[in-house]
Image 1 (cartoon, rainbow, N blue to C red):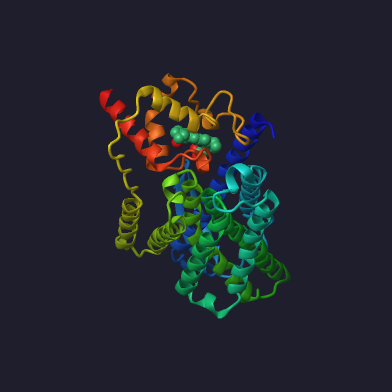
Image 2: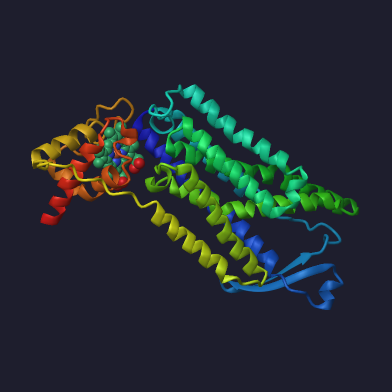
Length: 397
Ligand code: HEC
């Protein structure tokens, strides 16, 4: 695809994905908060079948919200449903996955250093993992395990972490992370489509017919909503961490992913309890401490100085960067996949290289995820020499 068109498509779909996700998660947070904040209503409301109410002020007006224990006597003329936020988030997310990771599989999904698979194989594995995982999750939801909330959560976490390890054997590090994110997102959207919505439809139909709704529907819908609720922070964090190589690029990236999911779900637990009036700061504090500990553990080991090295001259260092990075980062890249300079970063002149020193240091020395998938095969020794030279240059500034 034309790289210019590709970039615009990517920008537009990403924008829509973020907007729809905000709408979905925003609505979801609001309803969880609402449910947990409702108070016992006055008697006259109770007589109407209202089990909880609350007052709020927002945007210059007062709002009175009432939740019925079962259902109103008759269906209101307009009933608002919340489903398109979820569907459109999933659709735009999947479009992005196709555009960046499937059409661009050679660039972002396949890492020949790990497994030299074809684009078709990679896509089949990816799509298979996404839908296969929902199948497993949905099955697990129909076993007695689901009654034991905490244990169920732990089993899902272990399965996902194992899957991250497995996918990491064939996919690029980034591709692995995005697939775990896509799997969680797919389960969440599928929960809305295949369980929560049908449950609500059954509820509405029962009320319209004047029958008592089957509690089974309400129970299952509630269960899947709780799962979705705990998945929100992990999925958001995975999507963002995909832009930070210190997470996915780590030697044990799959374990890091497991830790991120655990900490994020734990932090969500704090807010869930707080809405119900149970304030346990220890949960949030321990999540923050665990997070800081994770950052500390992931701190890269500094590259050892080369023994007996006389150091690179400026000309040698610049040639090294041009050789190892310029195949992609140039006005006219020679790379077979990246035909325009990625992120607009170009190293054609020594001035450009000098301007980019801090980021060259960050990506080639600290996170070591550039050259991209080490396509131009930069050795550790070359990184050490470059590191020494950059340190010298920055000290001289
Ligand atoms: C095979 C192509 C390729 C090569 C070779 C390559 N890069 Fe990149 N680079 C990319 C891609 C793709 C991106 C955009 C995605 C990203 O940021 O991870 C990028 C983004 C960057 C960025 C911008 C993002 C940021 O972190 O500020 C920097 C800086 C960078 N590369 C540095 C380097 C350095 C230094 C080298 C050589 C040691 C190098 N790259 C070699 C493909 C390449």
